[in-house]
Length: 386
Image (cartoon, rainbow, N blue to C red; front, side, top):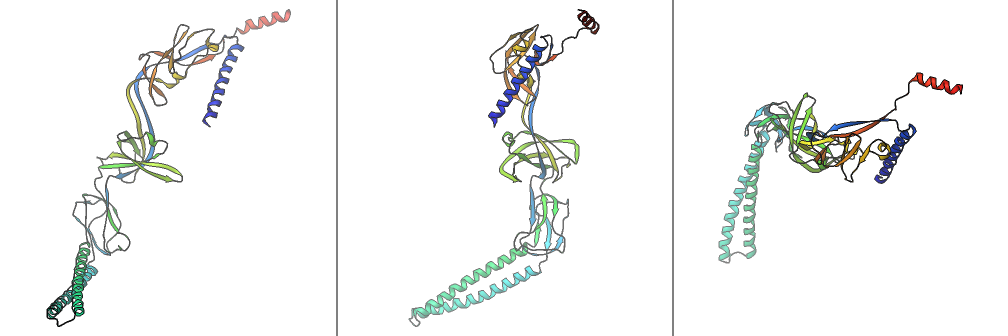
């Protein structure tokens, strides 16, 4: 496919040259050729890619509960500032206290059974030494004693679990932050049978935000950590926010057969303008060079054809891969140059010509000067008389 395109472009180029030659030959070579020139200038060259993203806090925590129950008290609301260890909510404790009481009663019963089996085993052990009981009877007593010990350990674990669940009825904040989401209200029942129910969502620091950009697979190869980023949000269309690329995530996101990659961009938010969930239009500067010599990229594509310029100009060409042309009098001279980076519009000139040099960018062929109309009419009359 690429080879076919190259052939087509080559043919088009030949046709254009042939057309110019034909025009020149047709008009007798009287056309005026004008050159558009430019200068090698010092400036900045930058390339960038664009993407969209979503503003998010750097760290958020969904605070939930591991037990089921009715929300008895809720101490925070949206935008509440909380500290680590602060009480956020309390669940009704009735069922949890009942579970603890049941577990403790079971433990006491198992402890009584253990005391009995321990004494029973001691009697059988004494009788066994005197050969007054069989070995089987002794083994049964020993086994019953061991089972009673295990039952007590299980009952102790049940009590500990019931106490832990009771402590979960009081929900504390795990971090310092701001409440940005609330999932329940007082009186609502939360159930932890299948998952941990969320009560509130806390953002650690809203002055330090980040933007998750979705970069197309065709552009992701140019993105690197540390690159400069600017972005805007619809909420503040006149403000331009700045950040840097913090992370390029390797996991692809495929939506409707479109592959994108998530790029994490820092978004300092000292004035708290940026809010979670805002959509951002992002520009990532993949290449930046400051204070370099450059010319419009079109100047590197200019090449004078001898068939067009040969009658009026002396052409001094070079076999260099990259060259710029200058005009002095009627002499067109090619200068070998070494090029650097380009943003598609301008190209860096590393060496070959100095800053300020005037070079040819393009040319135009204008119509030849037309003879005076009266003189032409007189000529026509003379021709008719003849």
